[in-house]
Amino acid sequence: MNDLSSNLIAIYIFVLGLCLGSFLNVVILRGLANEEFVRSRSKCPKCNNQLTWYMNIPVLSYIFLKGRCAFCNEHISFQYPLVELVCGFCFLGAFLAFGLTLKTLFICLILSFFILLAGTDFKQMVIIDTHAYILAIIGVLYTVFKLSDITIIESLVGGFLGFIFFEFFARVAQKIIGTRMFGEGDSLIAVALGTIFGYKTLFLVIALSFIIQCFIAIPFIGYTAFKDKKFFLSISYLVVFVCILCVFCVNYFDLFSNEGKYLIFAFCVCVLLFWALKNILKEMSLKKRLIDNNENDDIKKTAFCFMPFGPALIFSSVICLFFLPQIKEILLKFIN
Image (cartoon, rainbow, N blue to C red; front, side, top):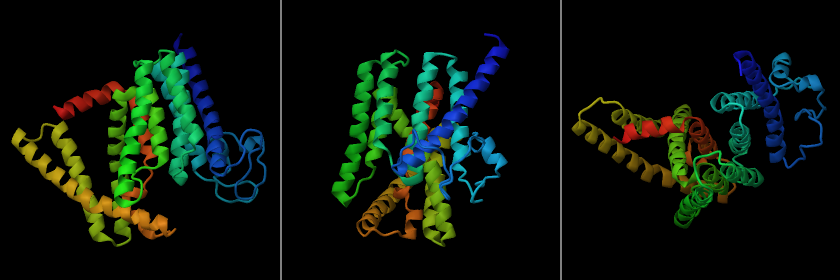
């Protein structure tokens, strides 16, 4: 395949991803609203007017319409072009990484369901069970067709252990403080990821997702707490974030002697453990109170336990799909 043909195929796959991303937007929004999304025409969610074909061109329509509905002039959610672009670049990345192969087709299918799961979880903290089940089936078929480095047994065991891992901690938390640490949707996502990656890589994906959640959620919650003038809470999150950075930098970069590394590492771990015992359990109790009393308290904005975990799981899975060897190399250097 010459460069011109390869470039044309890449452009075609990117555009195909944009178009499928437009469809995924419909599936996300109508799935959350329990509406049919196959046969019904696209419409504005604000005024319910049906959209013409030139209002449905991925990304371009949003730009030409200046982010507003042509009928009611209300703002169009930025979710539409964002999901379309994410899907387009995911498809393009799959083609560039794996070529025009059956593996690329499966990777694109997997990425599409990743977007669905992350989209519904991020928008309403809801996982549609059917999406997770279909992704798990795709994960098994991905192994059956020998497109991954794991066996069918490792795939099935990975799905089982993924479910057990999240359900164990969720139910332990429920016994202790009366509410789950993870949602049932997270357990279903873990089943699907286990079938795709196998039980060995699955726990690397989970570990990476916790790191991603910390790096995204902690600064966001700390900043929100600062805006709400909860300065002590804001400072505690800042200290935790700095400790996490120190643990990573001290181990990955040769900045200190071995003795210095051990002292800094021990100090950071103590701070993190203290913060976990003091804040996470308190937040979980708060979550139970808010759920039991059906409250909609502003304190939700500064509670770590109200951040959806599914997107972090999905993001770490995307990283491992494309960069698993590099992640393992970084992990080995971090450990050593």
